[in-house]
Length: 178
Image 1 (cartoon, helix red, strand yellow):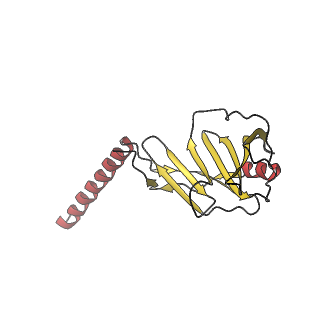
Image 2 (cartoon, one colour):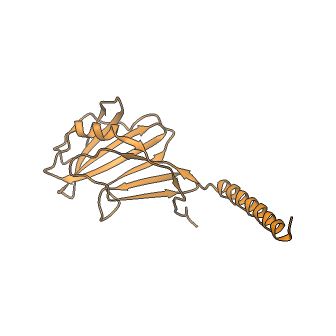
Image 3 (cartoon, one colour):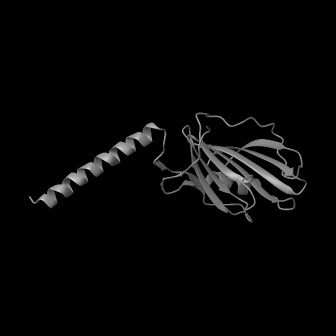
């Protein structure tokens, strides 16, 4: 074996060791190498996703799918949860109400979800959908105009449509503080 071949083998061995050490340190520091999030394959008419953001912290990985281009208020948020129950609802859901109204529903595929409605700023009809998909809590705030009513059958279809996306590598990281 020539000196050049021997040097290449030693360099390859050192590179493998460095990659393993970096991977171990990354995992020990709470990093996430692979994360799969849920994305709806159906959206109610007139609704579209404009942007996606994945944030990993030491404690969790959050996914946000944005419905508007102005801000991140109207979006689908996802995070891991240990909860097995949905938030309570008064059972007074009304898609035409300006005040906050909520009820629990069951989708066509037997997924339980909480649906709320209110009007923001007197002009934005806000549909809030909260569901559990395994250990993932999915909270959606869907905006429409006040004259555009999203019917519960469309919301049920939306709830049933969440599917896993391809796995992501190297998500965006946000620092937890000082």
